[in-house]
Amino acid sequence: MAIVRWNPWNDIFDLHTQMDHLFQPAAATTSRNGVEYTSLPVDIRQTDAAFTVEASVPGFTPDDVEVTFDDGVLTITGRRSSTETAKDATYVRRERRSTSVFRQVGLPAEVRAEDITATFENGVLRVEIPRAQKAAPQRIPVTVGTTAQQRVVEHAPRA
Image 1 (tube, helix red, strand yellow):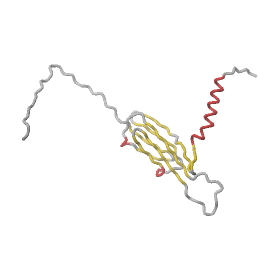
Image 2: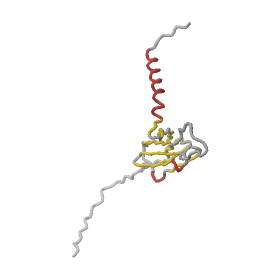
Image 3: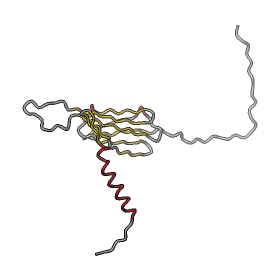
Image 4: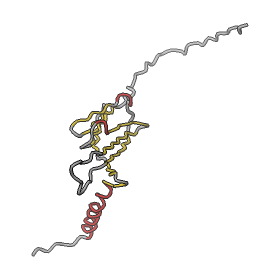
C-alpha cells in the first residue's frame, strides 16, 4: 500500500466541484406553471470583423426564436409549446409541454446593428454581428509659414 501525503486543499476543491454538480441542474432548468424555463448555452467567437454567437436550440423552429439587439445587448428568446393531444390514448407521463429559453449577451465593442444577421440550421442559431470600423489614423500635413491673416466681413442688417 502506497502512502500518500494528505493535502487539505484537495478536499476543498473536491467539495467545490461536488457543490457545482449539485446545483447545476437546478440553475439550468426551472419549471413554473407547466412551462419549463431553460438557460441557453452559447458560444461566442470574435474576429476583427465580427462577433459570431451560436446557440443550440434543438426542437425549436425559426418561428419559435426571436433575436433582438438593443444598447449593446443581444437577446435571444425562444418559446415552444406542444398543444397536440392524443385522441386514441391517454398520457401516462407528459414532460414536453412548453419550453422557453432566454439569454442575453453584452458585447464589448461597437457594432453595426443594422447589419446583424441570424441563420437557423439543424437546431443551431447563428447570429453574425459585424463590428463597427475604427477610425483609421490620418496623417495631418504640417505647413511652414505664418498664419493666414483673418479678414472680418461686415454686412449691413437687412431692412
